[in-house]
Image 1 (cartoon, rainbow, N blue to C red):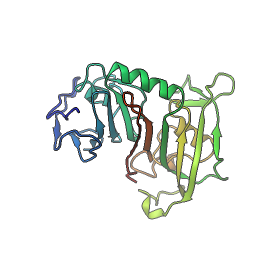
Image 2: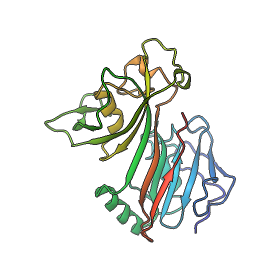
Image 3: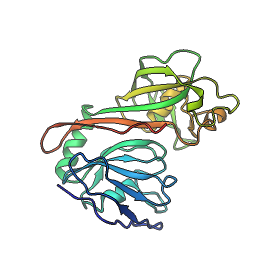
Image 4: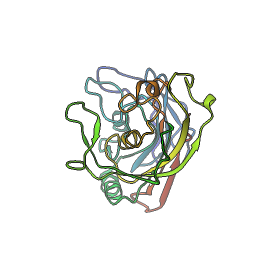
Length: 259
């Protein structure tokens, strides 16, 4: 098994020091890596680590990939553990939740195949403004890059990529649980649980907005009142299931939704 490092220096223009108050162990979720000035003092929680994979609970505000002008990221932290570390999927900077990073070439090959064959289960939770009609059980809308307003996505049946999002549950949310719920024009709020079948950029954010239920705190697809209705993007990757690249055991990781 691989132990957590005592300190990590993030390369780039914004060097960050990591403080560890535990040791990496098989399924030991108590390990936390403290990262100063990242995601408002948030931390990376290590859910699991061995020589093949690194599974974490990514905080909101932390990039998955290396920022253009330097700074901390998931991949930079992973490469302090293994020079072969590569991302096999990503979470948006403002999305929190479970991520897996491949640390070996064997793991990368296996994980990439599992994501490609859609055998990985990816479950998310979000707070959305209630739309005029109920959410459909499956959102099937093709997405393509917005050439004039990057990094936004647009719905395009001509050049879009087929994208599927399954709605697992949809229930009313008490107003007091929503940050800034008193903002004018926000309207009723609902808590939804979704399964990401495909994996296009901004898929959940765009899909929910295009069916009339934008996510609270979303700066790209929500009206201003909904964007201002929360102090963060109310989207969290709550559950991830996949086969361990070496043993073949089915692994399930969960991170409690922080809102």
